[in-house]
Amino acid sequence: MTGRHPEIEPYDRGLLDVGDGHFVHWETCGNPDGKPAVVLHGGPGSGCTPGWRRYFDPVAYRIVLFDQRNCGRSTPHAGEPTVDLSANTTHHLIADIERLRGLLGIDRWLVFGGSWGSTLGLAYAQRHPDRVSELVLFSVATTTRQEVDWITRSMGRVFPEEWARFRDGVPVAERDGNLAAAYSRLLHDPDPAVRDRAARAWCAWEDTHVATAGRPPRPDPRFADPALRLCVARLVTHYWANAAWLDEDVLLRGAGTLAGIPGALIHGRLDISSPADIPWHLHQAWPGSTLTLLDDTAHGATTQSMVQALITTLNNFRPHLLR
Image (cartoon, rainbow, N blue to C red; front, side, top):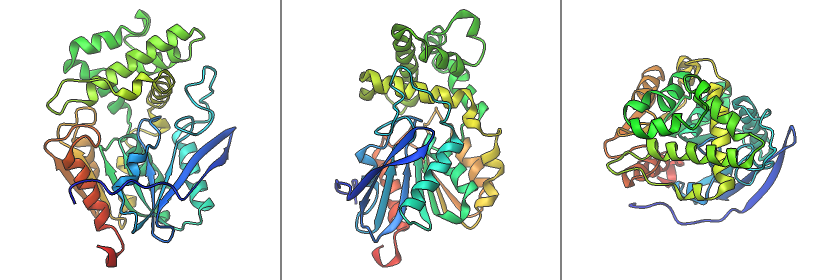
């Protein structure tokens, strides 16, 4: 197979009341009697788009997708001016995944996540290992303070001019501190002009550091939408300012608890946003995991080799008679 699986539409969908005034949009695709798999999108805040469905063989898999709190089709939306993010943490999202699993009557499922979704997948699997049949993670990140500092500060050594513009988007008194927290405050400012200026600056920096596979940075077309731009910037800064509410290196230290759960880590060697030592150290600490490094790939499923690696891995985890 040289491309993704055919386009498919959900056979069921709904809004799950997860408490705290939040409603999470979910959908199921593929074979209702197939192997269950749950998709954890990136961002935080990107939402689960139709392309995620096409990594899975629709004959073999019962594919569960959902938009995490405050993004996509879940409500309330972080692009709304007065949204409250206080009930949106990694721990809330883990609980949401479990509520959704219970709603759908699924005992165990394959967990598939990329970028931020890999952090969430690891955190969920370490909290509920008995509910995970396999883990397939790509563009692997663990959202430690060190990783956040790398992207928001140390990467200025790679993109000095672009980083200086990014740093100068916050008040002088905050430029030597937690830049994610400083941007988060600006993104919740009562003045819409302040919010929009901060969202544009944050997304411009994201465009810079994620697109490094042999081509210059180019704008993500999704960021042309002011509501989505604000949503993503707010949620990323909310999570990064707090290092995802996880103890430093807790996911690496807890990797041994995943022993017995087959795991595939797929990562681009050119990924400067999440350097390859992140999945390498995780692989060393996780008995039974595999690590695939792709020489032509940066962050995300941006190359044919990444797409093919993900599809091949998921095909290998299909029920035996369908391989």
